Image (cartoon, rainbow, N blue to C red; front, side, top):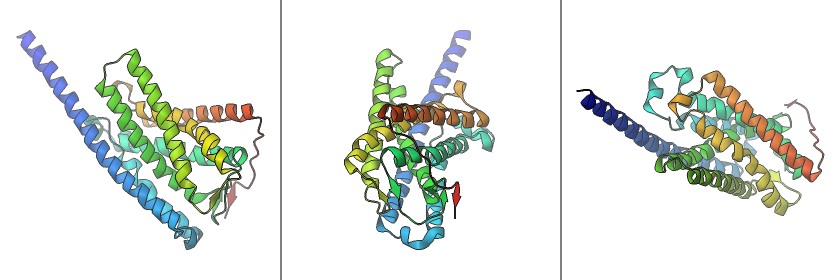
Amino acid sequence: MDVDRGRQETHSVREKKESNRQAKRLSGYSAGVLICFFLVASHLLWRSGECVGCGQVGEVASSMVLAPAGPLNVPPPDSTAVSSSFLERYPFKATLWLGIYSHIGNYWYTHYFYTVLKASYSMPSFRLNDVPLPLYFATYFYFSTYHVLSNLLLRRVCTGYAPSFFRSLFSVCLVVSLSNFTAFTESTTISSFPSYSFEDRYMAMTVGSAFYGIYFLVSFPAFFRFDEWEKARLSLYQTGMDSLGAGTLILIMLETVRHSLRIPLTIKGKAYRW
């Protein structure tokens, strides 16, 4: 009797895991398609110049409309997330994680591009720490897209291969290549934005892409693991602290690269400019 009961429980656990895996894949693909749609829509809107020509309030409004579309549809790790309180559900915590990360990236990291790559934004807009306010919201759904897709790939590796040294090595190589590919792709596509310019476009495509890729070397694995496994699930407070920790690590790495290039960091402008 005990043996039969044990077999039934084992079978039930396996069925639950397989069901959760299928739910992850389905929700992940759905989220990826939806977010990619908003990403393409935003790219066409900004490239057309309509957003730039609609005034400061219009720029902020257009970016705010698209911003929430991404993180709220990040695939939940399993079906147990539905039964928890709203503040402890995966979509809300993913939104918090990406929100903190995106804000740090705009408020602080952008000045490394101003200093190292001599980049500049000429768009007339409200500014927070000399960064156009619409970019805070635009970064939100761009990062949502990147991290949903990276989650799908990393989850496929973790569920498709048994734990081993080679799986870990493959995961590291995947994160490195995906980070550089993401950074280079965005650097290439954003170059068509009329209000964004560099002094040296070649340096922006090479050094700039490697510089930008540092963001994702940290954030892709950090965002993937923070609520992926039930035993390692984080609370809302821990999620916020985890995102702040990832942001600090990226800042340290950016500082290390800047020091190696012997380029002084200068942060100009007012905290707020309306």
